Image (cartoon, rainbow over all chains, first blue to last red; front, side, top):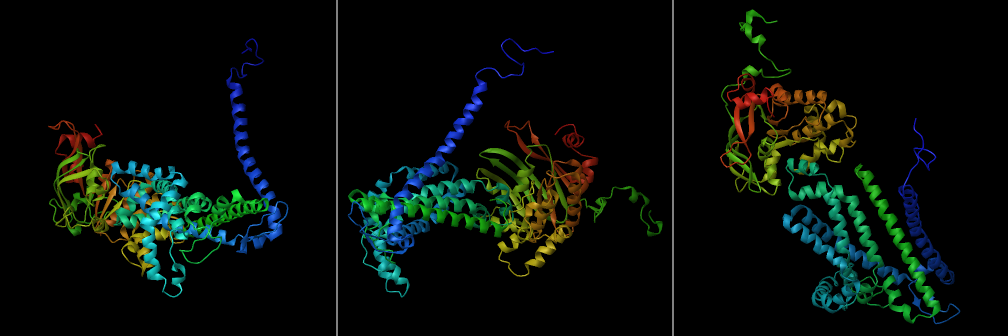
Amino acid sequence: MTSAPPGRASALQATGAGRYADPLFKWAAITAGVSVLAVLGLMIGSTTADAWPVFQYQGFVDFFVNDEWRAGFSRTDFTGEYGAFSFIFGTLVVALIAIVLALPLALAVSLYITRLAPRRMKGPLAYTVELLAAVPSVVYGLWGLLYFVPTFLRPVMELLSAALAPVPLLGTFFAGPVYSTNYLAAGTVLAIMILPIITAISREVIAQVPPEQVQAAYGLGATDWEVMRKIILRRSFPGVVGATMLGLGRALGETIAVAMLIGGSQRWGLSLFFGGDAMAAHIANTFQDAAPETVQALIAIGVGLFIITVIVNVLARLLVWRIGRVAGDAAL
Amino acid sequence: MYSTTTGTHPGIELRHSPVGGETPRSEVPEQIQSAVFEIEQFGVSYAGTPAIADISLRIPAGEITALIGPSGCGKSTLLRSLNRMNDLIAVATHTGTIRYRGLDLHAADVDPAEVRRRIGMVFQKPNPFAQSIYDNVAFGPRLHGRSKGLDDVVERALRRAALWDEVKDKLREPGHAISGGQQQRLCIARAIAMEPDVILMDEPCSALDPIATLKIEDLMRQLREDYSIVIVTHNMQQAARVSDRTAFLTVDMEAADGQRCGRLVEFERTEKLFTQASDERTEAYITGRFG
């Protein structure tokens, strides 16, 4: 019985601007999604292309395991020696120190904010912690170099070194002399820098723990501490690992603050008080004066850093998956 | 069929006898011999607004006591005060006293965790932990330092909760992989594994279907042998079916200070409360005229 109004083939045809909006939005979204992949692909492609001759010259494996780095000055050839192990070691050690220091603190802060803090303290506290993330890293570097390390950390480091250096085996990690810039100084300031991101995500994850389960545990006579340990942390474990990974990602890539605090010696050492260098920090410190061959070698360090970050992330995912399977927990 | 040779009064057969009940309702003594809780002038306020006030009653040991009343009358608040679960609400404050077996529950040296170990709780919604069935039941004993003989503890608790036969082959499966009714019995087993003295149940069947509800009610009658039970229920038939005594609370609309606040109206043997309530508000509620 229905007949098409004038100008339309069928009564059921769409009218108005609305009929263009859906396809338009769809294509805009597809473009946005693809462009992310394109940028990443372009970056990997071009850096790998630049780094490839360095890997060929030095040997791919040798680049990662050799600790001899001697910048060359040629415009056309490779003349230096490019073994990046010292920087890789520095990056991993500093990131590890940062995580070891930041994770317990971040968990304690998140638990305090979500479970223990008085109601009117929660908001301001969470906001303050997140504000730490807004401080530029160069400011952290300066503050660490000029104030935090000499005033607070150095006396602690000297104490640690004096007390532990004579101990057999363990002493290796605390051997002096102690200066203001070293692995531990960089790692400690880095810990403060990654605290906000770990705290923010842990806090979200902890807030997601079903209140019924918390109640059930209290109902069985659990104390606050037992509820946190046996229910909340257990349940939030996968999310906390995720938060740690984001923190670790930032710690591995952090450049300026680490460059200012790590020492910059192009060598590596087992002592926490060794002044070494890290991958991103070394790039930042040297690329301005580098000859073309060395610039390529620095790009190779960048590719190496990317590879290490990917490996660390894959390992973390395996860890979450493995522990999730053991716990038999479907809440992943 | 009754036998006249035993000398039983013939009329006894006509009295209501609860299904599977170990103690016929008629034998619930008029007077309370020993009280597990003595509640005196007890009130709770949330951020200064009273939720319940002026409640005094003695909850008997070894019986099932039901708390009934319309929404908002504070029956859950009262129940949660009995093992100090209400302490977890930061803005809650109380007046008056509750004595548990003669001890003041709110005395300064009382540890709420110790209170809750002796006075177990089953919640409205089944809330097993995201762990295996075994670990759920073993949670409490482990919490209190027990590590040996857990298998026995778990089996005994599951048997006591009438769940053993249904789960004995899947103890390692997650606690939330069984049906809602089974989950609630798992939560009861988890409470029993603590060997408590009292079990508090906060509308334990409100999230369950009728068949699962009947199973829990049967279970409650069995548990009555060993535990004192206090149950909050919205379901008056349930109170009538399972409880020995019933307390009726209501929201006092005409309070002197004009605030809505839960008060105790009547506390009686269940049989009496449901057949000859002495307060007209009780009768109005149980006959379905409000609530």
